[in-house]
Length: 150
Image (cartoon, rainbow, N blue to C red; front, side, top):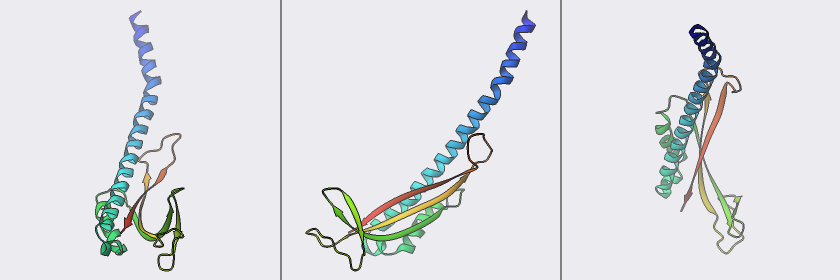
């Protein structure tokens, strides 16, 4: 009787081990992608912090990108950083921002000066270290941060 029970246990282990392996490697893959997403977020925050420091820094787009790339250098995955400046008028009733030209644009409200904003974006491609059923080969991840210029 003991031989049959031990044989059943071995068969059950052989049947369930691949399921546990797929679950384990799937969770590891998601953890690595989550880590990269946090690195992208830290990268964009560094650029926004640099831009929000003072007016001169907010107009220095290469400096903003350089500040963000300092943080991106700690990642094992290549991260692409971009920065842009744009202006917009905020409708306080609907909380909708309408993008206008920074040099010639004006707002219809009492304050005719548009808001000046800096948008920093970081992007990377997370390539999975192993092939798992149901998951693609890679994920494109992005993060965006914005800073208002006063």
